[in-house]
Length: 179
Image (cartoon, rainbow, N blue to C red; front, top):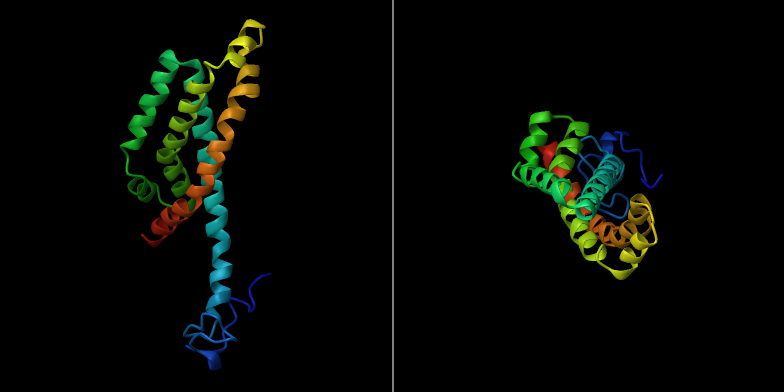
C-alpha cells in the first residue's frame, strides 16, 4: 500500500536509473523501483523482529520475575541457565539451526537473559517494599502479588528495553539472512 510502484514489475526501459523524483532510490537492472522493493522487503524484517522482541520480552520477563520473587533454588537454577545461554554465540546457534523461524528461536534462546536479569533485579527491589509485605500479611495469594505488584513494577522498564532492542534484533536477523 505504501510502495509507489509494484516491486515485481520490470520495466526494462527504466533499467539502472539513478535516484530521481520519479524513483527515489533509482531502479535496478530489471527496471524495478528500488524504493518500492525496499518497502516491500521490510514486511518480513519488521514482522520477524517484532515477534522476536515480543518473545524475548515475555520469556525473559516471566523467568526473571519468577526468579526474583521466588528466590532460592529456583532463582539459582534460572540464573545458571541464563549464564549458560549467554555463553552461546547467538549467530552461530542461528546458523546451525537455519531457517527464519529457527533463527528467531535461536536468537531468542540466547537473548532472553537480558530481560530475565533486568526483571529479576526489579522484582528483588520491589518485593521488600512495604506494600508487598502488607499484601502478604493480609493473606494475598502469591500469584496475585505477582500479578498486582511485581508485573506492573517490571513491565514499563522491560517495554522500554524491548523498544530500544528492536533495531539491534533487526540487524541480527538481517545478518543471519545474509549469511
